[in-house]
Length: 207
Length: 332
Image (cartoon, rainbow over all chains, first blue to last red):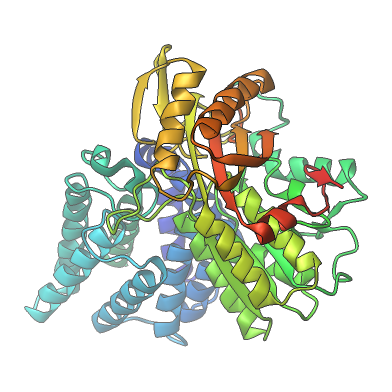
């Protein structure tokens, strides 16, 4: 049977592949109509090349990142590639995870994406889902919530972050060329990041 | 969608194979990659120039691989930046100890992927520099955008930096002349009909029958506004106004002009546009030292065109007029 980390990546990959057309349509409205296509190509390859039975979480995540980096292209490739590789670095050698590991992963992922994309919160990017998700997750755990409740709070914040991207002007990426015309549209990267977090929640809660 | 293809997944691969089959005297494909290099690369003993980007802009960039221009071109998926490993392969396949200059069009994805490749090369002690072309005046350059896009003006960077490298200049000298071109080149385009990315299957944007997009980007990104189509002369005047408002080009200056087709615009219309360009520049006392009219940086089957002006000094003019021999651009 495939390892848990492989199954988790598989859940994420399948969701992205399933939402390929919707993500591409979002990107057609304010970007260059390739987000879903590119992400689906990356995850299709990742699911084919990842070691199915390795329970070395760090190694599987690193390999996922390298595959996305070499297959996705555009801006999503370096950003998601960096995110998975940073997560892999934090979790090097681990075969199981604690709620605290989740915080460390979030911090490394956010730092990696910010460094590569030179973006901050409020620019209509994936960070508008990921940063609030991190804050909600951390606050819930610090307040004594169970991991399940913390993951629910994380996803709720990410979904609100996606809604928030509809209200703001894009200042990073191709959507920035639209200026005010980008208002009213949700950010494709924030959307795919939220799918990722939802899959992680559903997977962890299902274990 | 009506396209002359064998399948949406094969577009880039078959385009590159067809190109290699057409021009074996100029280019070859690095096996297992989407990289085109000069036939017999690695023997040049000079600074190498590498460019690339999403496919769909042919002849950019593979068509400019050859003597006096590029050493390597990296092809991404249609309208999608190539990945860092592919750019790194291009560096490895061409670099011969004198360093590599990466010529990047200013798009978020291109910049990130090429920068990661530069990091990978630096780890291997290969000397790499990069320049970012941002010639599109349709986009206001402010802290509120990702910056101006790199469009057809990139071809002048290929030509002039390529000629400089061919003379045996150092990496820093080649980079400096590329930066000089970038500082003096401005472009603006407009779209008449949209184009369809094969994998998407429908047009990237919509225009009414009598409508055009002024300031369009090379992937069909929006420009400044949509308006009702007007005459070629009025359209040229509008684009040139915005380019001339940059304050770079004045009476007595020498410029090179490029009137570039987006893919589906007939050459006859490009010449009609160029007539107005030449009239306006003559009225302003700007001397045209060289004019290029044709399809240099296309956007699949988009209809429309762009105008590029490059202010020349003696160095840039000499390098622009130096010989080049590539599949898409040859002069003696």
